[in-house]
Length: 375
Image 1 (cartoon, one colour):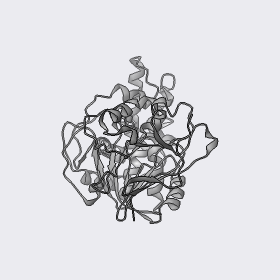
Image 2: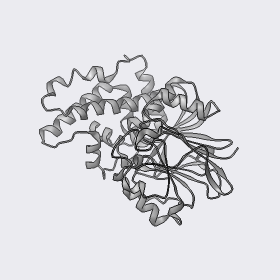
Image 3: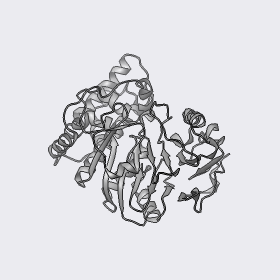
Image 4: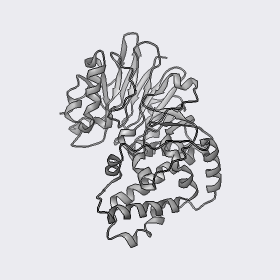
């Protein structure tokens, strides 16, 4: 069986399936678990995935994975998550109400200091250079096991329902969008960690900020983190609750992966929402597939600049974009690329498609996929 790449048409968000004879991985899952399961049933014959990876804590990347793990319809061997989440993992699982009360006080402090932050993304841009993991403490596996066991049997009401009452004393100055985004971001991390533990799935953590990689498996020979290293211990340093959540959704800190099923020039660079503005090297090759960062947003133009400067044949890159209906995307930089494909093109009368490539001796070839027709 040749290697394959499929950009699943999940609507809003990313969901990329890479596989060969003995290995399959899903990187991100879009915004809907139900939609993701239907598409996997259609485009993946096997009812098993070696790796399920979440690149960062945006709803249109993580929500579908929550639905996938909750359904238990597909066997998952490993779940890969951002290592930065581990810094407040115990707090999220054992004392989520106290954590959210800290978030509320953090937001109130910003407002009282006249610092205007309307969303977690705004705050993430401000915290771009914050170092999150200068030291280590306890093993992640031990902390996760103890925290989940301690949280077992707790009320399962959503934090959104609980903390809405707490916001009342602050309502006159609380940025509501920031508040609700913080609650939802907290829920996504809690659910992914808990569901992985509940299903007895091996969880591996990759952090973009420091480098003590200690574990290798056969999986990492095929799917390799580009801008991150695996960690097995939790940092002794803690950011404030609101800073932690902001960095968890930061596009610049998205995990990027390379899928290289053969030593030859048949590879895939999965960029998530990263602008590729990091120092780690990228194994560029002619004819490779590169997923358009942040759905082809013009804010990520540096990724195309880097490809044009470093790739030996940038005109040969196969750019693949997954997105919902947005008037601002794709941007001009994506439209300037010669070989490009979309799960949904603008204007939106063209309908959705799965972008499907299969590897051959000559490189990647499309299967029942039309080139990009965006204007």
